[in-house]
Image (cartoon, rainbow, N blue to C red; front, top):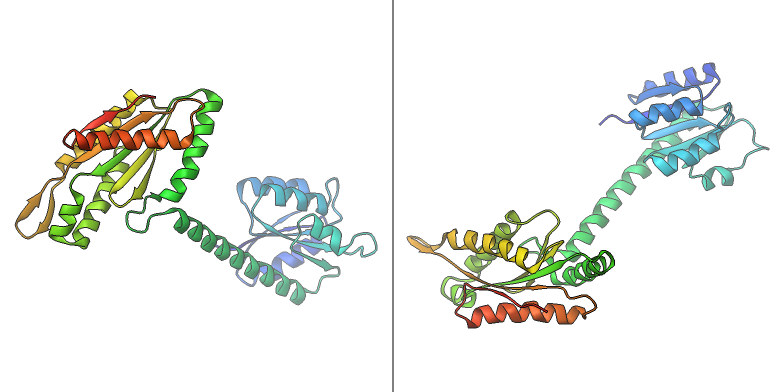
Length: 300
């Protein structure tokens, strides 16, 4: 995407001169002759950097800077010919990235512009890396589902919301039947492949508002907001049917089908989080005890 620079100055000659100079360096550039005009331009064509004079009719450049920093992802370079009236600190306090005195030396302005753009790129890269690190901290490496650490954080938030708005909330625990035997017979790589495919099956059968977690080993849990225990059973049946239909080929000429055991419970207002989780886990254990490939609902 082209780097877009917006120049704001009510002195048409100055504005034109800066525009022509910056334009020679292959930046996409446009001009506005008032702060109000600049705001209208930014609404439809957000700039990477705004270069603005402080002395403007009606809304001045510092007010414009504050407005830009509140509403747009753009850096601002402030120009002024009135060094006694405005300070560097005032401009920076408003959110300006740099400050330059008039008459503007074009070479100096270009250097400052390049520095601001470089810092902008570094900030974006730093934010991207931070986001990746944050995602890694809450994501299971193998299945790419959320991990158990994030499960507890998210469940607490959903419980708070359920209580605040008096809305139902259900929890599913799922465990792959005889997974250890499968792992022992065909190896960890095939076992990992099964976990990955099961994670995909779960996510493909849920709503966007639901969230799935690898709780540990071959055990998975799903948080279903706005869902009663009975409605959660429908979701569990969809997942169980899909898993039963999945064909695994751990060896050449070998086809294997796999089942899952599921426990379901609905949140009871004012109960402890640990009680809620234990009941869902117990429901899943009951499904195992009843012969596996079962769905058990335990009501509060």
